[in-house]
Image (tube, rainbow, N blue to C red):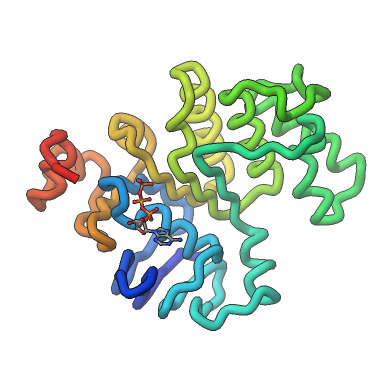
Length: 246
Ligand SMILES: Nc1ncnc2c1ncn2[C@@H]1O[C@H](COP(=O)(O)OP(=O)(O)OP(=O)(O)O)[C@@H](O)[C@H]1O
């Protein structure tokens, strides 16, 4: 996979512009933390990249292809979307077993039964939930369900993993498993990861580069160490110290 590059992006709701970006590049294999106050436009950015949002204007360079976002057809978007994985804050489980939930994407991709069994087993082992394979997914605890959602995404081996506050509702035990899994995937598969989080220590722990989004713009971007230790703009300094009034 090549870099992900967004250019000339404008997203509006009614007459309000909620995201306006000239250019942002995410290098292949990078782990990016996206932080910023509520309503800044972080989720909108991830939805645009995941082709779930049709902006007024914008170009996307994705998996070596140039995409005009405002005119993108379903037929062109679908194969690109299949190379991405998305985990949101709240997992939604299908009314089926844990196994079937994780197998779903592989069945869409027409993998054979033996391959599916091996890959689902591997994904459930990774999130430490093999023992719940036969359990109905809608009976899982919130933390277990989120780990199943992660397994369901990773089993399809996405080149680009989009995470939108994935651990916001989890307890420390589940957070540590979730973090360990995405670090492993990043290290072993060189998956590009974009993660929105309100948990600043988490962004510091995991991300190589952080971006600060405020009022629909990327106001600052830096290596994680510099981002937290030497913020350039006052808004970021205020945000990090908890002084920002949203
Ligand atoms: N479908 C929609 N219709 C109208 N306004 C919307 C819609 N989706 C998002 N918005 C608005 O766009 C702005 C950006 O929303 P977005 O969800 O991207 O923010 P965010 O930075 O992810 O916030 P949070 O951290 O609270 O999740 C917000 O003001 C939100 O109310």
